[in-house]
Image (cartoon, rainbow, N blue to C red; front, top):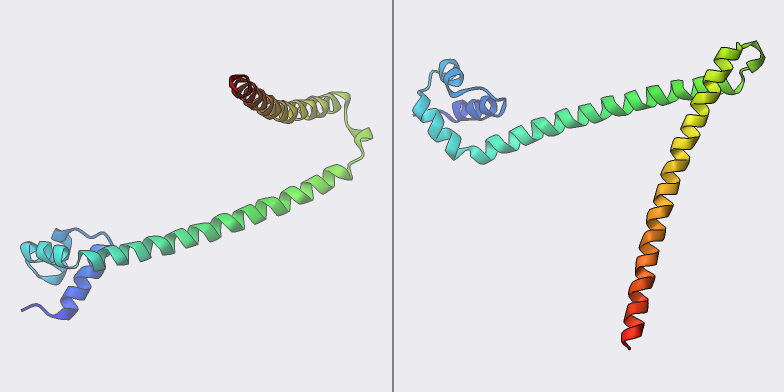
Amino acid sequence: MKTNEQKEKFVQLRAEGNSFDKISDMLNISKPTLINWNVEFKKEIDNLEYLKYQSILEQYKLIKQKRIEFLSEHLSKINEAINNKNYEDLSIKDLIMIRKNLISELMRDTKTKINILQEYLKLKALLILDLMMKLKRL
């Protein structure tokens, strides 16, 4: 008869992703027994896997959040340095490149806003036409 300790160890090892062969060697229990246990303890194994993945996901979120904070902090410092920069010591070539990039960014942002406005106006026109058609039918 297998002990509860062996069964608990099986659930843990299975939740960690170990194969039946590997667990069989580690616990010295036959593979058919382990397969039966897998069915019997499926819910427990799934719960442990879920908790493991949740823990990994939380760690990832923290790492990602810290990275965003780090990048944002340095971006703020760079923006501040740019705002304090005296452009008189830049070459004409550098000023032209900066100007070109700023214009491109402004055009891209403006174009996006214009596209959104155009879509809004199209929808509004369709609604007005629909309303007019309904009024004509009355």
